[in-house]
Length: 284
Image (cartoon, rainbow, N blue to C red; front, side, top):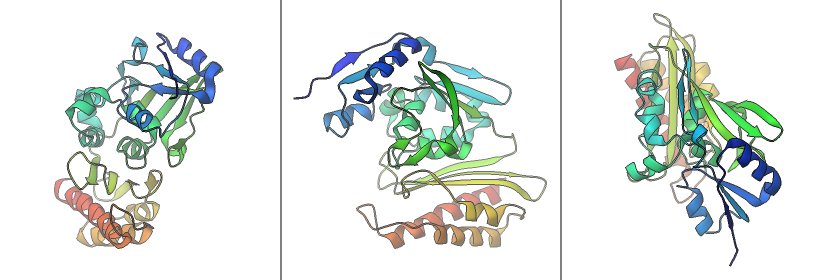
């Protein structure tokens, strides 16, 4: 049986020194809702587990005038229930509310879900739609990476083996923006067959910005640029909703698997797009 050494730093500096020393032989433990299961099933390896839960500086939420920054130990539930998030980033609160059950949301962390990069996870999709800024630390210093540049593919990210994701800066949406998160799963709390984060901005009539990011079907969060092109500069009406949903169906290239056939997934993406845009038309 593989022996794993447990390390529990109390500062970011200690954690990055441990990662610098052990590199690819170490895994970072935050809330542990994904990592512990993967360790049990031997889906990930490593001789060292670096538990960052004792780093008080990472359990923080800092609200600014145009963004809110959350530390790596802030749980889904804490962030979901934060007043500023619910008021100015409702798509995030909505997405976090779909994750697992209350026990998972009370232990799992938003930063951990982002770094885990599970293609069927909710955090990468909403983080990409918001294009949050990720704060990465190592013994060499600090750097920031936008979510749009973070994901490479299946469980593959820009995060280096000696780096620690310490914080996530989330931009606040304009008060009159429309946003929603839609996910279709076999059962409540299950992984989604398809998920979609939508953010729309407009002047009095015309859509000025549209961000639609698809999850679960591709191997990484994928912006539906063709749908954005269909929407921006147009007035939202039933005809536009229909055209955008059709463009979404045409854009995706799913495959058959245990979650459903490719045809079913194409239909599902179109339906999620139409449902979100219809809600925007009725409530915006």
